[in-house]
Amino acid sequence: MNIKVITRHAPSNYGSLLQAIATQTVLERLGHGCEIIDYVRDDEHGLRAVTTAAAGKGDRFGGARKLAYIAVRYPEEKAAEIKFERMRSRYLKLTPRCRTHGDLARLKADLFMTGSDQVWGPTLGGHYDEAYFLSFVANAPKVAYAASFGRTDFTPQTLADYGRLLSAYDGIAVREDSAVGLLRQMGVACAGQVLDPTLLLTGAEWSRLADGGIGGRYVLVYQLHNNPALSDYAVRFARHVGLPLYRVSPTFHQVRRGGRFVFLPDLPHFLSLIRDCTYFVTDSFHGTAFALNFGRQFIEILPNNKTGNRNQSILQLTGLQGRIATDLADYSLADSPIDYGRVDTILAEERSKSMEILKSLIGQ
Image 1 (tube, one colour):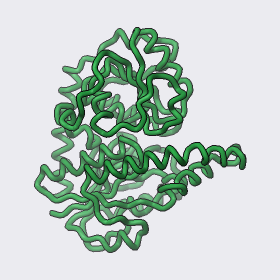
Image 2 (cartoon, rainbow, N blue to C red):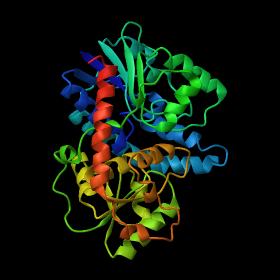
Image 3 (cartoon, rainbow, N blue to C red):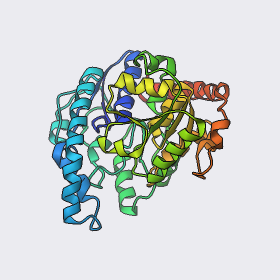
Image 4 (cartoon, helix red, strand yellow):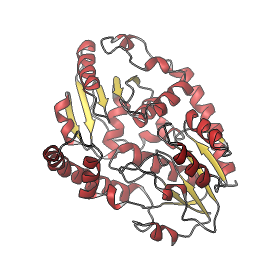
């Protein structure tokens, strides 16, 4: 079949790119042609993306402060946009660029799929987008694999809208256990909870994309959210274990948060930094997924917003809730190694189950 996948592939972050690569890879291994729908909203691209984010800061973010925010963030956002555009072109098979629902309606496929990541959560502007619910598809089956709501606090009206849109799907599997509950609340059938596509590939398979790394023992921090407590913890943790701290980020303003800064690396280097680190500190769901894939000793600090349920879901699935640092003055997780024999067994079983659900969704 020709399968076209809509997902959040275009934000300038590594998780968005990696989950799209994984979805494409797995579908191709099953014998299908796969294209990622290159849907990029105008308000999530270029200068408008930065001004949209600034507007979302609300009234507490005054006019002068918003202008300063835009002046600082736009150059780094542009640099990341150029780099990630190049990486998407290299690693993904993309449809022609779609900017509107009208562009999307002209696409043809044997089957359309909503892919992984926070596709059913709010966009940068704060509202959901029906495109990620495949509302533009009229004459082809539509399914969802590992789709995520990103959060659980939706208004009754939003849940009613979601129920209407999702009831038109031919099959749905979701990434978090909380999403299973939301679908049940809406009265929408669910094929089950499945692994994020990045976890369908093993660490050995991902390592083929990685470069030779930097060598030596080190602590790595990969931080998505503006949480000074996490930044301070990473610095103190590295000092506690007596190892250098490296910080990897596609946003240059993190240079001030501590550690030897690795700015906007190519994908192979990003992967090798995680693969080879001695300890890993993160608030990122996909950071956690790759710590699991590569068998790293990681410390999880939950995001300081409302999206931590996705991190908690994968930790609960693998029995690693104890890796969440709740006391940021306690570094004892450094002396509690993860038993990856048990974790790898769980992941192997979950990969098998997830692949069977995926195959049933696409009629294979």
